[in-house]
Length: 167
Image (cartoon, rainbow, N blue to C red; front, side, top):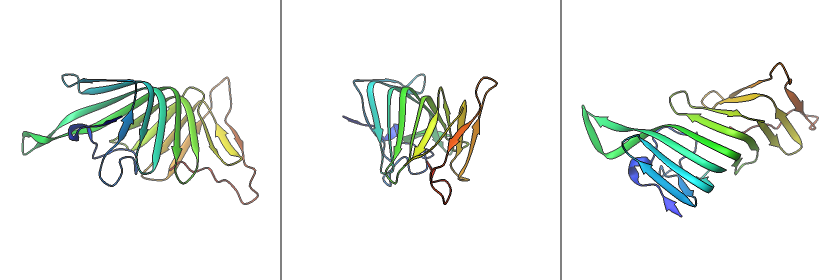
């Protein structure tokens, strides 16, 4: 098990994705930190967890930039700009709901997650799938896109409407 050092902790990340202390705990078979490229690669049985989320995948890359304070590089770290999870991606929230895809990308500046490669979101018996699913976390808004080959498919079993919420 590895707890990311302070310079990899993100100020802007999944809503609730680092926990209150700002940490993301990542377990993997291997980790490679390349400070010159501003990236941390986790590979093999990757499981990242925080207070609200658990993400499982084959490989995860955190891209970061060094934090500057008054024009100087801060001694307390960097800001996570983007996280890319690939291979059998599963995102679960403790309050319910699960998303699956081949790839999930988190963009901190826009505070959004983009799922591609057979993405599907499930909550209980309800589910929705499409070609691409984008979650705008700040606005509690989602866009599910189809493709020319396949339309968006949604199943809502609840008579009161959807329970689909990954946010």
